[in-house]
Length: 278
Ligand SMILES: Nc1ncnc2c1ncn2[C@@H]1O[C@H](COP(=O)(O)OP(=O)(O)OP(=O)(O)O)[C@@H](O)[C@H]1O
Ligand SMILES: [Mg+2]
Image 1 (spheres, protein in one colour):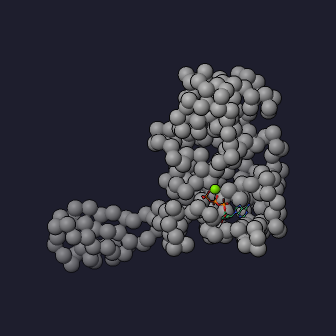
Image 2 (cartoon, rainbow, N blue to C red):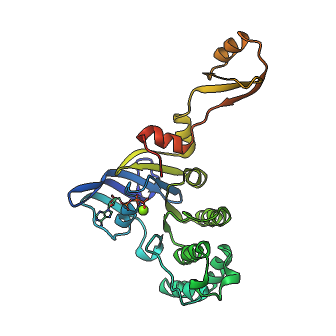
Image 3 (cartoon, rainbow, N blue to C red):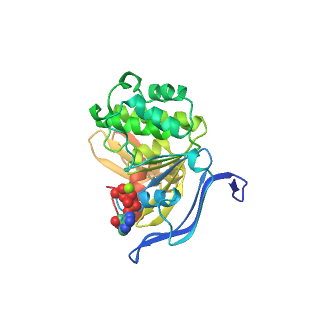
């Protein structure tokens, strides 16, 4: 197990990880660690290099230069990506049994995980007859049936409805509570904020910021409040008691609301890169 200078255990460690395709650098000196037990969000727009990073960490691609270390054996890792597939003509239950057998996992875990992804009632359906959200849950169940030490999830909830997304989020929290470290890529900043202990912002192959969502929101908080008066006008002022008092003393208008402005992750990303996430 690798440890950093604070003695914290790391599940993933990279140093100056770089990859080029046809002379074009796609990842540029990525240095980061994923702590054991955390949900780590890897965020960035399309083409930023998220999937490429997962492919390197799971040994599907060899980096051009730099190092990476993953502290889990192949059989202790789960992956859900675009390439993940289930056997369409087999039932949900048979698919899960197949993945359980591969990882020498007890059959009892199949029932457990199917109940957790709310597919136990659909266990005898063929995968080809399932909705998109149900298929995605089958794939997640296959990736997690062996209670992996480390789970890579490449946009697990993209194009899912809110209820299915919520069910998947609950499962991920559940897996985390049972000790699984999760590496999650997403475009969805609300999802990242809710799910992740720490996030890295990836832009054109560079990590441009990394930290806990709440720390980033504080770091990039606008030092302003917006006062909305009863007449509908809004006045923005410095977020300091004396400054607010001074402005308010100078007018006699009735106040409807005062809001402080907390930056969200999407705004932070935009301010750092000038790019929207989608
Ligand atoms: N095998 C490859 N050969 C050449 N270029 C590649 C290869 N794999 C990825 N790329 C390029 O690397 C860049 C990053 O791709 P990647 O799939 O990692 O992005 P991503 O962040 O996962 O995007 P998305 O959000 O759309 O999934 C893209 O410009 C892509 O075209
Ligand atoms: Mg991708």
